[in-house]
Length: 186
Image (cartoon, rainbow, N blue to C red; front, side):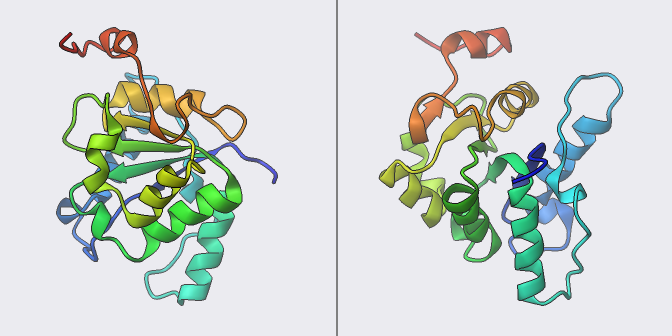
């Protein structure tokens, strides 16, 4: 697999085109953080490394493009919101292919949380393919809040050559959260 420098981003669009009605708003926020001049949040967006996919493209064409993007990725950010578990289309496919074929770590970024210390308590938010791979121990996952600092650290650190510690239930330490200004009760 050549040129594995990208970060693949998966989310549940919930069949919505309006960015404020689905988790695409978090994808757009990631892109906005990346282009701001006043911070050092950087990543190579795997979605920009191949040709754009038209909404009207056939499923076979979309699948081929997504596989190509995943194969060129060093890791995957999976944005997990309140409706991600309901996705039966692209996010489940992306999770299966990322873990089973590409062997890349997943950065599970939970919306509406400031820290993640016990990811098993968030199981009700997991799409089935993610839950299955966590149970089987076949995935390498760091569970984090959807916040700039932990995302920046995870994207820069975890790759197909450097998996998160903790197997499928990896988390950041209390010290890491403290360095980002997040206090954790004892």
